Length: 133
Length: 130
Image 1: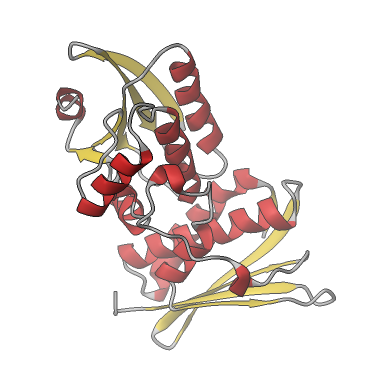
Image 2: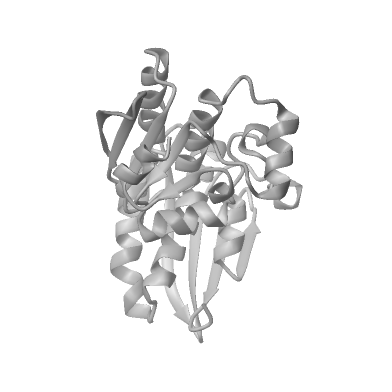
């Protein structure tokens, strides 16, 4: 359970680095999980909790030939399909600030699924196939 | 994360920021502000030493983008930059990276930032490239 704000990111990455190898993750997988979860939790703290204190429950487990992670939290929903793909060929001077977080998550994970429920809470599930990367 | 600053002469003065530690959304503002303070004091050419930076999230890239824009050559027209980008030849003449760690390099490539920033093996070669 992460309680607080962005200072929790180091704790999140340490948890993944300590836990993921037990599920058969190699160094590349650990890095991918750390970065994808960092980006996801950053978005939750910034855009759902509005930089206020909040709570995110993180679970990591192995499912067949993949490693999965869920992030559970309460707060507002958004439509992921409305988040524009960044133009990676655009010169930096023409790029908007930010906007790479969800792109990174989708690049690093085979599945990124959002479920929103005002009563039961929101859940972000990410899955990364092992042994293919 | 901590940042130390040194100056190199080539013969113009080049500010070298040595970034020690991870750059994420909890630390990127400090990174960005340190560079902004140097630019406000007149720095026009900068090397970011990422040899002691194990990890950078998209927040760090956001800071890089802001620093890049702050150091942009006002004489370079957008069409010149665009033409260079199309040819794959445009890189910032004022902001260069040195010795990025493996993970940071992956992040730079995944975002396409490596197309617009020179990446050197070490600080001396980055300084010599100005």
